[in-house]
Length: 392
Image (cartoon, rainbow, N blue to C red; front, side):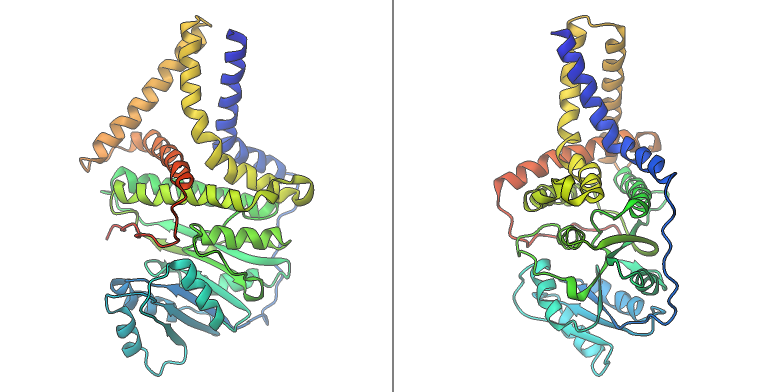
């Protein structure tokens, strides 16, 4: 009994370690023996580009987003705002503000069908070789479009993922600070993913594709950015990471808003895995399958469920008197989760303690993944959701 429980205990610990740290370490070691990716130098490569901005009820951000988009240094850029279903005056303001501007187009409508259907509709009007998707509440660096286009000078590249940066202030609560730390680590992993073969999923805040590779996305899809980019990768095109092209956004307004966002993302992860079962075939997809399982599938479907089992098995091993090591590990786990609880308690009182960021956000993220699984199992998704608020 002790041997079996101990074996399962250490196996689960290994899986969690591999998911969050081991994969990154393994990638780093593998890349020590590979040449760095070199982007072809093609200064004459300047295709027309369309920047698509889904903007449901985003009037508060539209003036700044439009100015930011039109200030891009890339010369051959058009901007398409999709304001379908907005009832806050977004469409009317945009049409009045940019009347006669041939670089800006507004695609309105009175029915709210959701972001995915808005993108599907917008793609009917895109006639440029490249299309870039970005959110209305993000700010792009001035060279973002130029840096993305440069990546496409490699004919093997089918999609480009920009970098997502969370803008936090010193007084920011733990949720926002934890989100920022998470995305810094994600950016590090994406750099390694690109060098090995391909990024497995792009962030919707800023990503681009070759227009000809776009395929209609199911209207109930929760992670459109993930599905679009992974299907392009599955078709044999690389998805690369361009950290020099970045989108800046504020963290979630509150822990409640961040929870809403994380649960939806996790539900979308399980939905995506159900629609991409073929990517588990490593004999067909090679490195892509390895990266997909290691970086995405295990983070959604393995680690969150392994953590409570590790705690339960640790209690059993202590009860069976398996040794002082298991006593120490149980104490360590209890202290870790107490720190996470303390982080949550302080968060609800708008207090910030840096030492609690990691245990708090790690536990929070995995709890959201478990809740996301049950949300997916309820099968009530429509593709239309209430967006999470962002801090101002």
